[in-house]
Image (cartoon, rainbow, N blue to C red; front, top):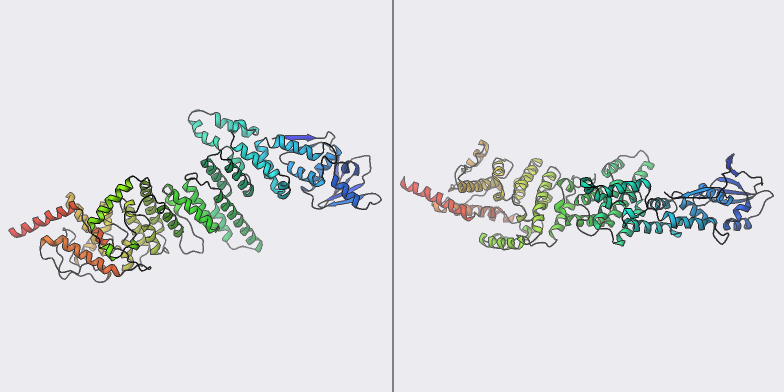
Length: 631
C-alpha cells in the first residue's frame, strides 16, 4: 500500500471539555462547528488556504473574541476536517488509499485549490492519486471501495470512474506487470512460478487473480467494474463467468436459509423491515449478476445457472431475469445434475418444486432447432394419424435417424433424457404434483432420446405409490408415456408383478416379454399368484404365447381391452390379438386432452411386432397346429 506524508510539525491538537484545540501561543479567534464537534482554531492558517472559509467569515458578523462558523454538511465529518486543518497548520498528516477520498472531498469542499495558494492540498492529493493510487492494484480497489461513503462527491470529482478504469486495465494485464501489495504479489507469483502438477492446477487461478479482489466491492461498484472489464474485450468469457461465480458465492451463500429466517414471524416492525431490506438487496444483487452473464455458451457452468435460478425463485426476482436464466440453462442443460434441477417454490405453493420453469427450460432446449423430432407431438395427432401403418412409420424413422446421425444435438438429447427421467423420479414423490405436469415433463423429450424406458418406468412406479388415489383412467393416461418394448428384462419382471399398473399394461409387458422369450429361447417371467389369479379370471394364461381368447373374455370398466370373438384358427392368433388391442385403442379415442385434441394411444404401437418375433410366432403356431392335427 502506498502512502504520503505532508507537513513536518508535530501533532499539537488536543481535546479539552469536548472541544478540540491546537496548542499555540496565539489566542484562537475562530470557532468551527462540524457535525456537533467544536474546534477552537486560528483564522490566519485556515483562511490562507481555504477559500470557502474566507467567504463564510466575510459574510458572518464578527464577535469580540471568536468568529463562529458552522459546517453541518461537511463531507467526511470531523476526521476529514481535522486532516485539512492540520495541513493548514503544517502538522504532519499521512494519506493513503483508506483516507484519500475523504480528504479529497473535504479539500474540494473547503476550496483548497491553487487559486488560493500554490501547492495547496487539492493539488497534492491529485498528484498522489494519479501517480501512486491508480498505479497500485490494491490501492485502486481500496480507494474505489471507500467511494461508497461519498457517492456524489466521488462522481463529481471522477474518483470512482478513474478507479474503475484503472482496475479494468490492470485486470487484463499479467499480474507480473501490475503493482500489487506485498502479500498479494507474493501469492500470485507463487501461483505463476510453480511447476509440475501443482503448477498446472494453479494456472487457472493465476489467470483470474483479479476476481477475488474485486469481489470485495458492493454490487453497484462491482457491476460498473465488470462492465468496464467486459467492454475492454481482452478477458475471455469463461474467466468473466468464474469471476461472477466467485462474487455470487461470497454474497449469496445459504440464500435459502436466510430467506427462510425472514419468513418466520417477526417480533416487531423493525425486524420485518430489516428482513425486507435484506431480501430487496439480495434481489438487486442477483438481477445484476444475471445482467452480467456472458452471452457465450459455456461461459458459466449449468450448475451455477441453476443455483441462480433457485435463488431467483426464493427472492421473487423479476420474470425477465428468470426467463433469461431459463434460456441460458436450456443452452447447456445436458450438463445439469438432477439435484440442480430441483428448484424449490415459495412457501405459499402447494407443490415442492417449480415444475413450470423446468418445462420452460426443456421446451427452450427442444426449440434450439438442432434436429427434427422423430414423431409428431402427441397432442397434434388425430385419429387418422393414429391409424397410420407401422411400415410407413418405420420408413420415416429410418430417414429421420439418418438425418439425426449427422446432428451434434443427438448425444445431448440422450443426456437430457436421462436427466429428465431422474428428475421425474424426484418430483414423483410430491403428493401434490398434478398428473398433467408429470406427463408434460415426460413428454417434452422425443421418443428417440430414450434408448430404454427403465428409468421412466421407475418414475411412474414412484408416482403411483405416492398417489394411490388415482382412478383407472388416470393410471392409464399416466402409463401411455411408457413404451413396453423399451423395458429391460428386469423392468419387465417388476412391471409384470406391479399391482398398481393397469391390467392392460401388465398384459402388454407379458406380450412383449413372451415375444422376447420366444425369440431368445428364454423362460417367461414367473408371476406371483395374485397376478396369475387376476389374469386367470379374465381367461388370460401368461405362461403361454398369445393364443385364442375365449368368446366370453371380458374385462369390465376402463381395463376392458378384449371384446372380440374367439379366434377361428391358430394361424390368426397374432392378427386377432392385434385386432383386440387395436379395438381397445378405438375405445380410448374418446379420451381427449383439455385442448380438445385427441391423445394418441401408444398401445397400438406397442403391439406392433418386429419381423423377427413375427416369424418366431408363426413357427410356434405352425408347430402347435401340426401337433393338434396329429393328435
